[in-house]
Image (cartoon, rainbow, N blue to C red; front, side, top):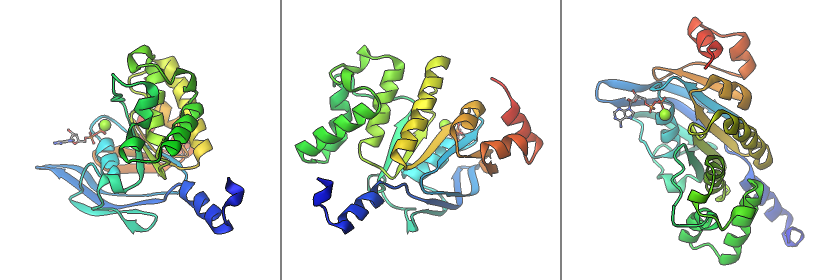
Length: 256
Ligand code: ADP
Ligand code: MG
């Protein structure tokens, strides 16, 4: 099929699959007197795996939801590949989401759960077949396509949630503590799986966790948040070897 496309069409297909660069500039979010994000700025590179790390209540989910569009900032700018996304509605952002609580439809099969969003967009049947088949193979769930969610393990349910996040071929995948509900062994397995999928897709991944080990093993870069500010941004090695404060040293070094 690909060979029948013109050269320009092939190029544009490649571009569609590439990750997007995100620029967060001076984002402020308040709830009453509480400043949850305090002039946060962050440049995320196209295709990188970046983790928002921080203690509970540090503002990770709020920042992620401002990027997804489900939450509105009080001030600041959000740009995706140079376009102003600050006030763009979530469904027009082309971003994929995976949550901790997978929110699978219990009465639907794995296949139908993954196909749901594409069908709602009235995509052609052949395209739905193709894409759902592709992502189920990618996450190694094609042999369980007919199962209902309650016939799956926690890890398998999380794979389905992941499939739903990537089936739209987003340029960015946002994940809010996706492994929080899994036990240690499954968590480690899924950490590797998510890294593998990141490499396979080549899109930008923004991952949220409060677990410093998870952040250190998975990320290209980590943004460590404390009380709504990024206190250090760098590679896992930089944060580990050269923490810029005692807070960072203790947070990164903490074992749990
Ligand atoms: P994290 O994901 O790092 O645990 P959140 O972004 O969820 O942190 O929350 C950051 C802070 O904002 C917390 O103090 C939380 O209580 C507060 N917060 C979040 N959402 C709301 C809301 N809708 N109304 C009031 N306060 C909120
Ligand atoms: Mg959170």
